Length: 84
Image (tube, one colour):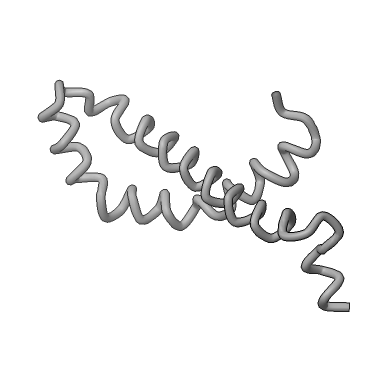
């Protein structure tokens, strides 16, 4: 599941990109999410952890979507070759 490519190209960049989003969620939205989860069935304990995992997954998918548009534009085209 986690080979070298997945770790270096997908998981680590996603974690780096997710840190500001998770901090925003923890410090600013945590109370609203806790109220919402209490309304849904008093899942306060697993709520913050589950929401963080869901946010991390969606950020990973957004990162993948943007990366695919750059690297699959043309089969030979790589953005770094333009900088050279």
